[in-house]
Length: 135
Image 1 (cartoon, rainbow, N blue to C red):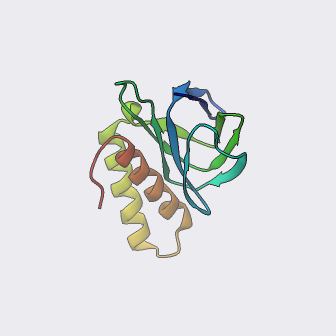
Image 2: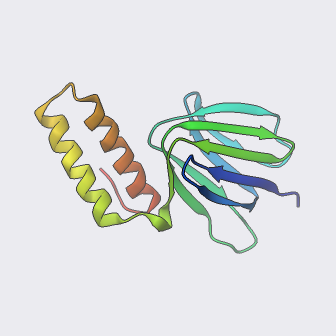
């Protein structure tokens, strides 16, 4: 079966690269699933979205929290250029929970605090990527 070549990068580092059977990402136009032979596409990734990389062949799927950026697909190559991204296995759950609590408290005290709302969204995505239940 054909495979996708996938690369996930942020300005700080290469997050992951390898082969996959499918990539699922959340864009501003909705969730998109990419499989081999997909038509070329360019998408804008949402803030606080999840990226799922299905590797197949008995390998576990990868999940990453992605905070903005772009997705490009051409010739079975998927490039994720994220403003900020973190694999679920790298998430410090205690730290993410603490960040979520601080952001929620800030949002509750100042309804117009857009920075706190964005931070809460990032923390929720990080926790979901790590496999934690988030309300």
